[in-house]
Length: 209
Image (cartoon, rainbow, N blue to C red; front, side, top):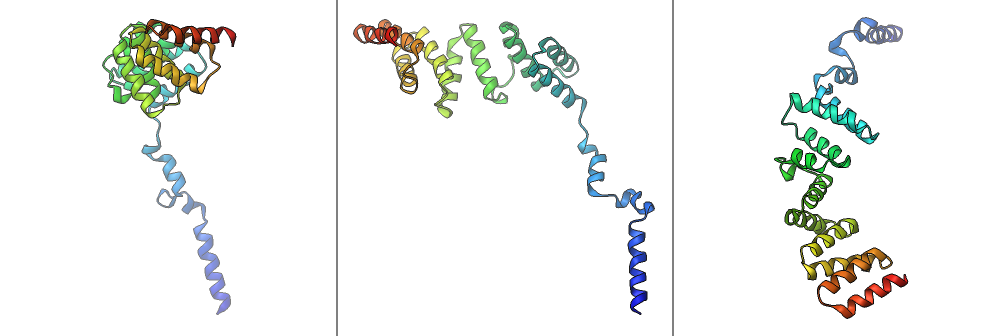
């Protein structure tokens, strides 16, 4: 009786492992089913977008722009392609084309990098008000980004917002007291604001550092 039970169990196990069963799609493993699932397919759009990004990382900007333009020829509303192309245009010095490409893209669709690029484009066009707004909103969340704070301070000084610019430069110097160029900018703004004695002190210090 015991022998018969063992043999029966062995036959059942052999049938479970048989090639016929393994080839049956109805009993294929979950991983193989997922691999054939339409949901796992990568679309042409996703592949082209990734290709454009890889080309951009490798600084093959002309090729990246061509891929983005091909995408936009068939999908003119593709925001990822618009943003990607605008970034490449900006990095290659074509700020006007980059700004035109971003025109109409909702700001809430941009990540921090895209928003800061948009602010830089506004600055390049001397459209300072929206740039100040973008920089300020970003710094509310990331107050220790001194590169962006310096950009804000510069724009504040150019638009004669001297108290705000002075506060921005002071914040930077508190974190980077040996930054000679920032101290000189600070001294200049103090001078423009009529604080000559303090301006002279800061400019002297910048010459002695």
